[in-house]
Image (cartoon, rainbow, N blue to C red; front, side, top):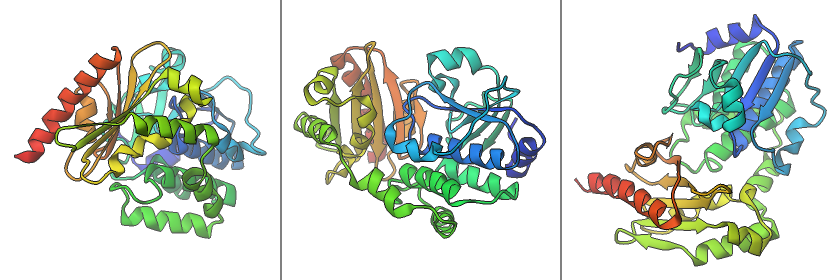
Length: 320
């Protein structure tokens, strides 16, 4: 059942004992949204805990400083920025996939799996939705809550460069800055700083970049061997996703990341009228028009072929 911002705020105000779920391969939006919501609920006396199928990386540590989460038997399961249950990861999907009472999301591909879904597909990030909910609840937006939300807004818009950025996105970002968000250091950490291991991984990835369809599509592939060679790991691949799309003339940029158990996670970024969610959707994935993802359980050659077949359909449609 779809519910709006006011109904979501009422549900959170009238209940307690919330377990907040983030998606695997956590990004700034799912973590920032969950941390902000947790802090807001705790500030009015609610019991809250956050879990994720993957470990949070160190750049998110600031969100949890001084945050005391309760150990309790959860009464209500809430997913944040999770479009489909499988994004909870195998373990938590099995435990909670059919028990999610509320989902707060902005993905148009959300399959409405939760009993209640607060879905705002015109929002650039889940953090925007959480901000509106907290305001509806009359919860004070403290500097740390503002910083958590700003992280979600800025990372899901590529620091306000992506096409999902709206006038309201800028307005909310300004309000978060006015509330004390540490936007300078957040921008430095997420958009200006590279580890040495990431820099080495980026170099290898770019060296292996391949072009298709008259250079309208660029694909980089990250293998397990590349992690071993650079000392990096999958937690550092997120920044690679946007690199292929940055090349002049490229309409579809893809990063293929080899998974531990085989297969490839494909992050798709597009320009113009090319719909990334259509490309991913044909391969049982999803996302947004400009950014989407899917997992292909095949070897590198087959996975690349399947991906290119889907991309070809979208590029051909754009030519009509």
